[in-house]
Image (cartoon, rainbow, N blue to C red):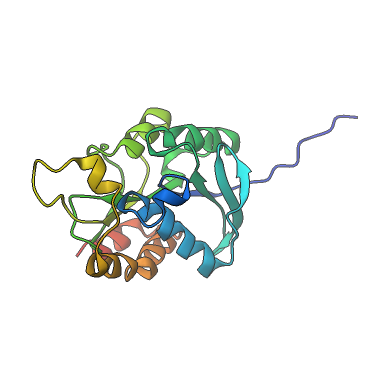
Length: 196
């Protein structure tokens, strides 16, 4: 008798980017982790299972079976976890939604995109190297460096000030709303609603 592996089908992969470890909590670069955590709480999904060099959790959102993923490889190697998960579940890039920080947007501004380049973001660069660039994404504004000489790494690994932190945190429901619209096939509508 042939045994078949039970197909644990996943419709979508939802990825939040950040760096693991307490010292990186609440930093600008961890806006993706924070947004995914907030969405997971709202959806009642626990992101605690270690798999694909990431913390993962599965559940259902609006009728879609989703895998939530927080890569634990550090930002620059995020593609390792995303590549492993998409290969395992045979998901095309169009079914991978990535949430991440963007230094070119004011704190709390959102930008939903269908695809695109890395724009200098090392986590996105790593994911593009793993699966190509045709994945939808939700960029979360964390604000620009105060002056051009300021080291970008120091900026993204720093913690936002009180007002900036509030502005970023105030958009977690909107990030979740954008993801839910993308899951329903309403990417264009999400772009026009949240890219204002």
